[in-house]
Amino acid sequence: MIRALVGVAAATALLAAPSAAKVPLNTALHPAFTAVFSQTSYAPGGIATLRVTSPVRNLDLQILRAGAERAWSSVGRPWGPEQHIKFRRAGVNLVRVRLGAWTSGLYFARLTTTTGKTAVYAPFV
Image 1 (cartoon, helix red, strand yellow):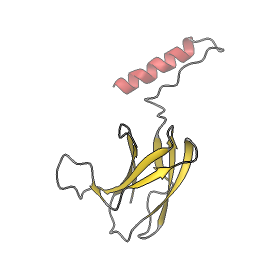
Image 2 (image 1 turned 60 degrees about the vertical axis):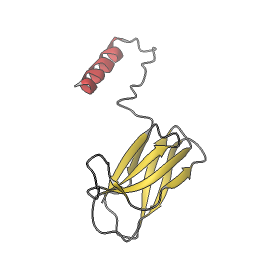
Image 3 (image 1 turned 135 degrees about the vertical axis):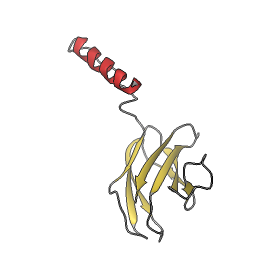
């Protein structure tokens, strides 16, 4: 509901604003930190391509498996070692992720800023 109201408010501000005025970009609707795999499904042992849009150059990547949690409070079970990624520049970057010979299931990549304050998730099968 709040998200819909923000969208309506942004649209109303856009209509009311003069054409030369700059309308601020709503970060809730257009986040600066995103991650998405180029495909929804990959073969075991393959290489997945992850498109990352980030305002920072240093991130931590952890692959998690959904449904393998041991407690209700966890998001997913870590599946492989955490990797540190350092981009040459902030913005849009591609990350090649080597997948293990894992069984079929729902996995996702968790990307976290090195400060641990921001995280995004990108699912794949």
